[in-house]
Structures are given as C-alpha cells and as structure tokens.
Image (cartoon, rainbow, N blue to C red; front, side, top):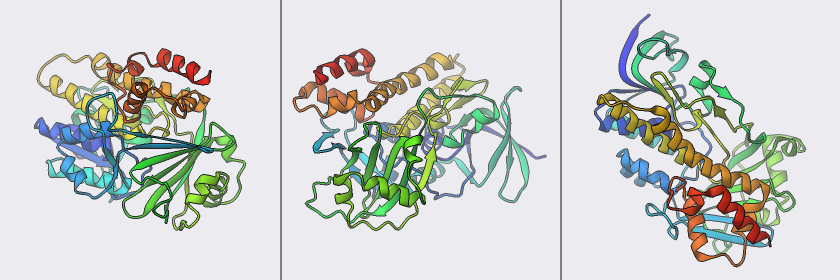
Length: 410
C-alpha cells in the first residue's frame, strides 16, 4: 500500500480546517487536507459572529471573504410574542470586529478552502479517512480515494476538522455523551420575499421564541440574494408531534408564531427541508499523541447563538499556535495551552445557552430597562467574544448572569 508523508494532515475542509491550513501555511508548513465531500456542498450554520473575523484575517483569508459578496451582518434581533429587542454588535464592551456576514455555507466553506489552496495547501476532495493509528512515532491514517484506491498518509501532526463527521472521536473511541438535553432542528432555505418596511432587519439574524414554549425557537437568517435560512430548534419529543415531510412539519411549526408567519406569508418554499437530531456532542479529550480536535469534531453545544464557526476558527488559531511552538522545538502542554483556553470560551457560551433554554436569559435580553453598560457586555458575548475575561460576564459568567436573572425576574 502506498504511504505518503506530510507535515500537517487535516481531516475536513470546513472553516476550522481551512483556517488552520492558512495559519500553518503562513508558518511555512506542508499541509494536506482530506475532505470526504465534493465542494461546494450544503452545510448548516450560516450566521457568523464578528469574533470569527479576527481568525479569518489572521489566516490571510479576509479579502477572499469580503469579496465573496455575502450579506453584511451587524447584530442580532430577538422576538418573543409582542416583545422585540436587538443588539448592534458594534456597540459592545470588547474591542475588535463588530460586523461580519451571513453566508450560504456551501459558498462560504468553498471560498475558505480555495483560499487555503491559494496559500499553498493541498486539498483532496472525496477522499475518505477509514482508519487511524496514533500508536507510532507519527500518526498515520488509511484513506480511500474516489477511485477506490486505498493509501496511507503519515504526518508529523494530525488535526481533525471533520465537524459532525467526528472522524477521530469515532475511530479512537473518544466520544462521550453530551450533558445537554437531546434537541433537534428542522431547517431549509426559502425565497423569503419579505417586503421593505416590514420591520425585518436584513443585517441581523432574527431569533424568535415560540409563543407557547420557551424552549422552542426559530432562526431566520437573511442572505444577500433575497433568500434566507429558516429553521426551528426544539426537544425531539416536541418535533415528533408533527407529521408529514420535514417541509410540512417545519411549515406547521412556523405557522404557530403570528409574527414569523406574517413575515414569511409570501415566501416561496422551493427547497426541501432537512432535519438533524441529537446534534450536541462531547469528547473525553480534545488532543492526544500527535493529534488535536478542532471545532465541532470536539464539542458542539447548540446553534442558538451561532457560536459554531467562531469556536471552530478559534480552535484552529490555538492549535496552529501550539503546532508552531512545538515545531520550533518548544515544549507544548496541549491541555494547558489548547484545551483549557478553548473550553473557557465554550463554557461561557454554555452558561448563556443553558440560561436561554431555562428562560432566564430571555428575561434578561427582553428586559425593558436594561443598563446600557450591561447591554454592551452582553452584546460582546453575542458577538462571540466569549474569551474576553475583561468582561465580567465572561470572567464570572455563572454568578454574574445568575444575579442578573434574579434582577430581571423581580
């Protein structure tokens, strides 16, 4: 069997893989990406957060993204019954980017993958990793090509950026149950035909709470071409109440919210809806001998605050920095220098996600007399700055948010 050698092998050409490739190419590393799909391919998770732009810029891919013509995004809007509030991410506590984009992921992911190729990485599409061995001096994977040929690749370091494919967690038995309740999503893209003057801000994602169920919410993410991503998230037992195709079920749930159904009354439902169940995931460890897990391959919380891509590219930046130091001959403590700082931001998001579903954070963001200073701090977290420990709601998120919930409920 043919055996190839590379410095860095990346499994998956999604955002974490492509950004990691860009960062590592800037270090002069030899990078090979193996992607099981043919790009462009559909992926969910279309609303980026401003914090992610820092890492896209760091990877040398900012111009590629800016010139792709995606929908400009400056914040997030929330609706619950007759209540409405929005956050402008430019009005935030943390320094850094305050704007970003809302993207069709098929195009966005392809833009980043092509940028990685432009920077000198090799990307092989439709190459499937079937086995991995991390017991030797270097990690080695067994790969099947589109033509059915099997070959091996040996690398100085291996990054798993396979997202929900979770290649290394599956093959190395690293998966562990998430402590989040099992939820699912129904989603599609529609030609929304939302008229100007409707009050719908196309520069913001809109999150709508179900009129009767605090734990059920909808996303509406407008794109630059008159279309939008539309979905609903709920516990699986709620979704199972609805019969028919995924499109019929999604349309029935959307019809239950008067504001959302009015906004979409002229929409053209021209794309069959899809579903994903039990998406929350966790692992025993984010790293091991000669490898690390990036983004969703390691842990995925929940889509409510659009944190997935930000966590993915943050993990790419941390991992690339660790690899750079290791290849320079420095001792790297992967737990302390990679896993711990990555988890710190993930845990901040976790605090707010858990509070959202319990209803407390919803009371906070819809409170009519919110402190402007506190709103700027909350805006920073919604913009993705979950690692900024200068923000009290990051440094001490559970206690601070708990106090705020009590004040808003009083």
